[in-house]
Image 1 (cartoon, rainbow, N blue to C red):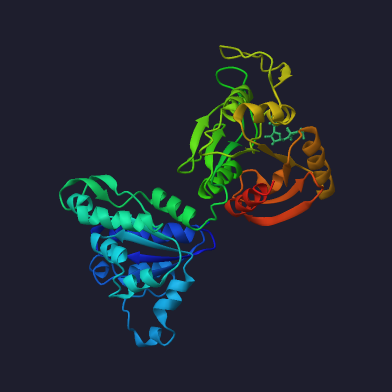
Image 2 (image 1 turned 90 degrees about the vertical axis):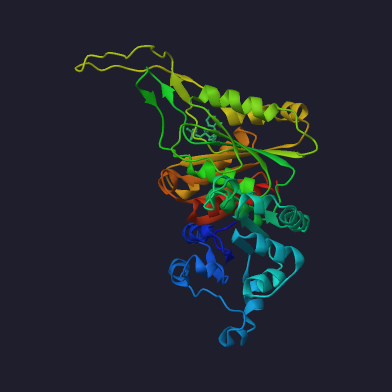
Length: 411
Ligand code: CTP
């Protein structure tokens, strides 16, 4: 996970070096420490001052700065990295890294680091396609480095083709993977998120305050740990995390149908050995008995009632048909439910406990509505079937999601 990690960023000599400024800003926003190494060629395109101001710490450039070498600077830098990102990665840097050449600070740190390496290439299309570069890329990939494909489009050199720095999202996703344990490799994960909407007529609906943030954070966290993730989302303003298949639904009935279709799909046994469902969505328990196809007209002076009928309880149905789903999909199923409550802590725990049993789930994540709805942070309690309780204190939803996802993998 990027948050809380130390990223050593190598800025190579390409016109795309200006984009490293935005990358630093995005990484800092995610709460990472960014230690920048600027190559001599990189410094021709962007100033150390720009990078230093954004990173909030000194930018390193020369290998043999006396001050740095007193503490064997390049080794200290290499050892501190949770991941090393080369962005932009030039053909020259890729070639040197592939062949173990260490003739400046950047390439020395690359050789000395045992952390995961991510390369975000940017260069002329012919340089990228050159057999020498492609051989070097293959060498790096064979050693486990994550070399991203450059983006397509108009290049600053005048050519059009493959050679643009990959999109920020793709770089962040690669770093997310590089900094997370791959404990979900070989699993299929289904996440529901957000609120459902139950229409009364073409204009009005009944819904709730869920924003989808917690569910999207769970999906992102599972994907960065190697899971094959499908997100089933109610209407939400959020952008789905990169690398996650997203199915958009509106009503509880649509969510129910989508979940049942996905969860029962036969496993690709080469890819999946276990399935997890995180029911994070705040599903409407009821829907209007009638949906009017034209706008409802009511007299402003009179009261009126809406008759509501129950919608399927998706988690309860998953819990009660667990064995047949396991037989259908060909893999074990683990169910994680959520409970958003008001009231006191002992009531929250009691309701969460009741949901665990009633819905035959493996884990319930209880939280208070006032801690969660529309917020970027959350505080939760985890309850499992052995009676174990665990509190995750207030933190960014991505951090809380990472802890929930890590706990669920032990089920
Ligand atoms: N859930 C579901 N289908 C529904 C309603 C809820 O799958 N129709 C899931 C939610 O995604 C969540 C858990 O069940 O994982 C919440 O349990 P629920 O009992 O529905 O919570 P509340 O709606 O808050 O229930 P209550 O009003 O009984 O507190």
